[in-house]
Length: 197
Image (tube, rainbow, N blue to C red; front, side):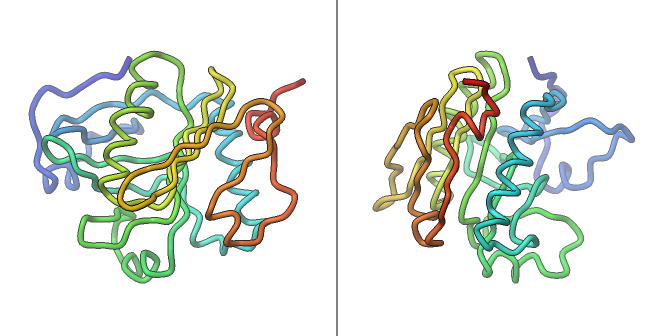
């Protein structure tokens, strides 16, 4: 379960917030939420996908871990996805920025990846709230990598709404983004989740 700091914050207050700790936070509907540390498996999955995108020819500076993005919520919301692939337009918008934050007036990233952490609260956040927020932000693809349910869900933008494709176990993942790259030797879900079959 995530801890919250009860006082409501504005975006400006969040951007200035520093309590001197190494803790990871997201701003959700104006409330600062402490996010639990990532599990080793989640870190390994994000690293695997980072390497996959590199192998497909995406420049390393376009693949981000720890970059924040503002999204639509009841109140101000900033998400920190596990991994993003940025377009050239986003790279230009971030050039020289003092903080790796993609604001509403900037283009959206190409792909956002969330690796689902254990617990119902985390699953609801990734499958429901973030899905709606990333769709409203018009992010072309949202990947939900779920080690607990042993599946990868790829949501692809189609006329303002997400189409959903679910891949499990030994299925090879495919997506519009990977097809545009003319990607070869794509991984299976088991490889992404580092499952022993």
